[in-house]
Image (tube, rainbow over all chains, first blue to last red; front, side, top):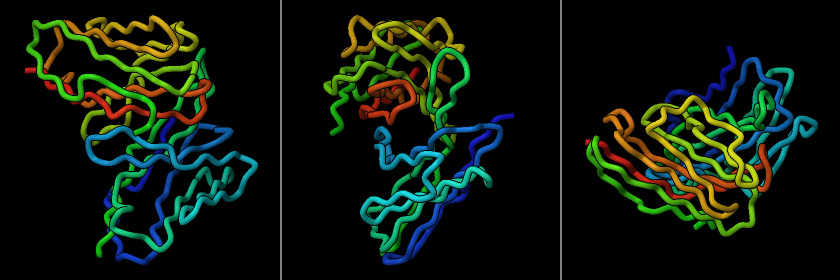
Length: 114
Length: 112
């Protein structure tokens, strides 16, 4: 069956360290993968998109990697700050059926301790 | 804020009520979406509209009825809901299907 799995446990790290979040997928062949941030009671906010032919993408303190062999994407936040505390969602495009739709993982809750 | 607005932000309704959720996007996008988000579960896609035409109905019960009068507005009409329908309902838009999506703040719905 098709699955998208993210770290099910919350990730607690110290301020200033690098947070690494994992997204693994099964039985999909996505052309690209997206990462979103969601704060409690709010809608997700788009962060980064990485294509299958891109190994790595960066935006300020964020870095995303995409390994289509391992079927995995890693999301890194360097020099983490308490304000980075949120749930991070990965999503991939499912091209099956009549609609190209985004399929979301359950998200990983990141808590950055001061 | 993201350019996608939703009203109301909070809604409490009884199982026999009829209410509507409204979404408006100011981004010039062609695709609009309704999602349901329950605790500890991934975002569940409910409906997709592309250029005002419904292209996806993800086996959603008929007590949820979407309406898309134009590319900027999307409604979700609710009637005879069940307590398990209580959730955060999110609207999103994108330039095309599969592109990055821009979400509204959501409507927190409680069915009593």
